Image (cartoon, rainbow, N blue to C red; front, top):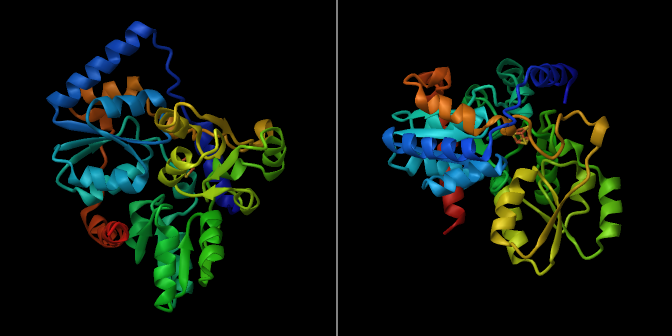
Length: 350
Ligand code: SF4
C-alpha cells in the first residue's frame, strides 16, 4: 500500500470505536428478540458477511436473512422481496446493495465500518491511474467505493476472479486490476494474463506470515491449509486450497482432513464449525503485536457490527443517519460493471 493510503488507514483505525458488547446474557437475548420483532415490523431482512461476529451471523440465519460472501450478499439483497435491507458488513457492501436495489432502503449498523482496500483506492488517484493505461480493461474488486466501481469495466469478487480474468485473457484483453495487489498477483499467476495491479492490500490478510505458518504446519502435519488470496504470495504458496470465503468453507466440509489451518478472518469459523462440527479449525499465525491491524485475523471494521448499534438503527425512524445513499448518476454507471459481475457469476453455475 502506498504511504498516503497507509496513513489514511492508520488514522481511520485510530478513531474506531469497537462495538465490543458488554451485554449480560439476559440483555443479549432481549436485544435479539427486539431486533427480530423490528425486522418484521419494518419489512426488513438482515444480510450479513461471514466475517461478522457469530452473534450477527446466527441472527441473520434465525430471521430468514443470509450469511454469505459479498457476491452472494449482493445477489440475495437484490432478489429478496423485503423493502429494507440491514447490511452487516462494511460500507462497500451497503453501497453495492443500494446500487443494485435503488428502490430499497439500505441501513447498516454503522457507516463507519469501512475497508482498507476501499480507503486505499481514492477515486481521483484511481481515475488518473486508469487514464495512464487507456489500453487496459479495468477490473475492480467489490471492495471499492461506488465512484471507483463507476470507473470500471468489470467488478469482481474473489469467488469468480480467476474465471473472469481467464475469460478476458482469452479475448486478448490486458487488465488493470485494483485494489488488492495480492489477489491481483494471484490471478495473474493462475491465468498468465497481463495484469497490472494497483498497490492496495487488506490489513487483515496481509498480516498472515509464511514463517509462522510453516511452524504451525510442523506442529499439525496432518492439517490442511486454507488460504484466502488476499494473503501474501508466500502464504498462498503454502496452501492446500486457495479460495474465497465460500470456497474455503466448501473445502473445510469436503476435504477428509480433521484439522484445518485457516488464513482468513476468524469470523468464518462460525460457519465452518456449524457445517463441519467434528473438525478442528486453527487460526493461521499473524505478525502479532508487530502487526498493523488492531485485532489480527479479525477485521476491525467487520467487528463494528453489533447488536446494540443494529437495534439503535432499527428503533430510530430515520435510522440514526446510518442509511446508505448513492448519487443516482454514479449508481447508474456503477450498476453496469456490477451487473456484469452478477451475470458472469450466474453463467459459471450453468
Ligand atoms: S477483512 Fe480486509 S478486505 Fe475484508 S473488509 Fe476487512 S479490511 Fe476489507
